[in-house]
Length: 117
Image 1 (cartoon, one colour):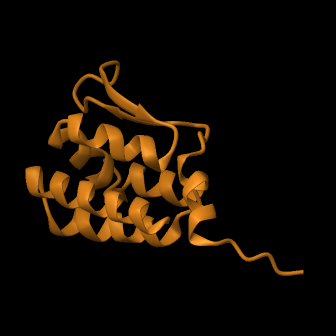
Image 2 (cartoon, rainbow, N blue to C red):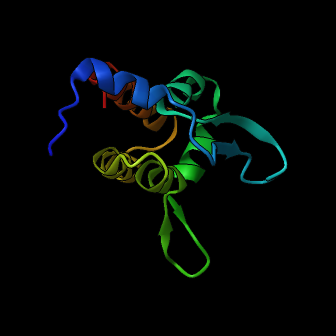
Image 3 (cartoon, one colour):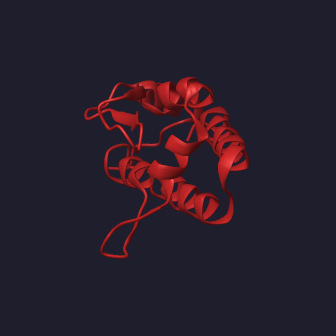
């Protein structure tokens, strides 16, 4: 049996709270939290308040073992099941830095919400 979900029906799925939340922390002081999101809608709501350096840290970080980490992309992929969006976040994070990265990410997330995922 195939179930078709209309675009209108997708929107509530993107605003449904999901655990665990995504938390933006200060890279130098992990106990300092700038914001948390339980859904794509909440992520869109808080991104403008998150410092760009925290966004950089959580979207494109080279760890001590020289692996590249994107905490946000992993959360999008494995918690929210938004594989395509996770890949787009990784691409943006490899291309842009600083305030430009923040602006591109805000634009991308908002466009996905508007599209319904």
